Image (cartoon, rainbow, N blue to C red; front, side, top):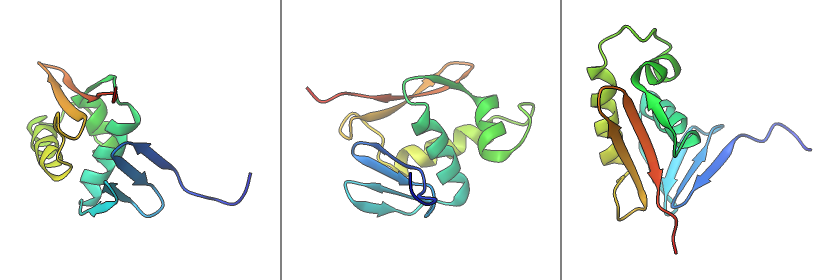
Length: 109
């Protein structure tokens, strides 16, 4: 095991580099704010699992879950656009009514 090497996560076609705080889609860098990066990396590390709005507030904002959750919804909406999360990319953001979100990764056949 070598030096510090950062966390790099690939959920194709996305690649995250925690050291550089960058994310790319099909090799192209996507411009995200720090908050959007934190939100995206948290969701991608938990893909396939339902994540509550309270957990997102705690982990991307360092706030308790009692803050207005419309903030989370607004950021998730922007993230969905910035990362082109859709059936075409094979990665979708699914809202879970009254609770939070789930990032779904469709496996290629």
